[in-house]
Length: 69
Image 1 (cartoon, rainbow, N blue to C red):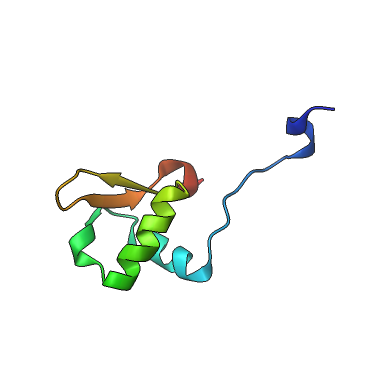
Image 2: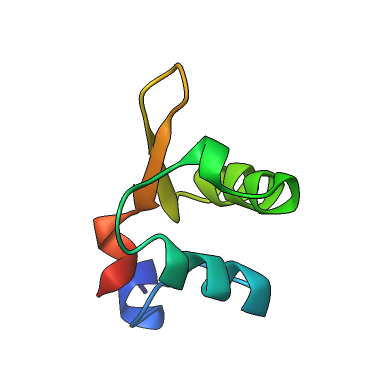
């Protein structure tokens, strides 16, 4: 039996707090404009591939297109 036939939909778990931040990141926003707590959450969301970081010095973060389905 193939794994694809067992899993019909694959989604990455996001907490309520992460979902609130994802709504805020619908448009690109500079990382420096977020609070320290939000920056920590965004870093964990980057590792989960929920958010993309663009740039190195004062990066911009935006929601990943694959999450907006």
